[in-house]
Length: 192
Image 1 (tube, rainbow, N blue to C red):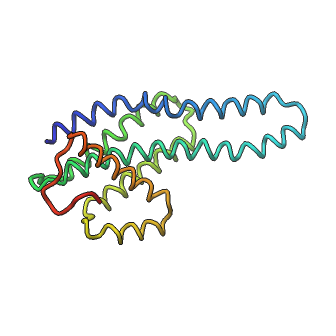
Image 2: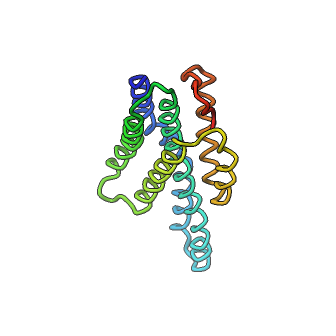
Image 3: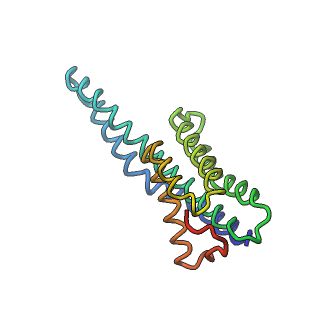
């Protein structure tokens, strides 16, 4: 079971940098186009207006990247949690360590392609995605089916973004079960 987890996640982690390019390119192109227009404006009023408008554009850029990276983290942690559910798994920690390495290996590869001019926002993107992975790993591992509603009410207090990551993980697990990639656990811990 471990090798199925490892090989499947390894192949997906090789594909992720290309998927990242497909998902992030439209947002990057929009931002580059916006700043190209900003450079070509000659009047002081136009430059000032575009300068003010640049903050929402940068916020959209930042949040889109965060959402993609956190979705990737949520996917990997859902795979790790799904493979640790069967009762015959004795060393759960190895799934989480391998998942962590295979989750951030592609991000390290992409960061190495940036060169020495990596920005603070790139570091912040990866740090936030790492925090999402760690928080999901610790909270989802011991989450029993009877605690679902209480946990959801608590998460709503922390904001809808964290709740949406939980829904992403739940969707990934349901898809894995429906495609037969995983067997439904024999324990009382169903979907969370």
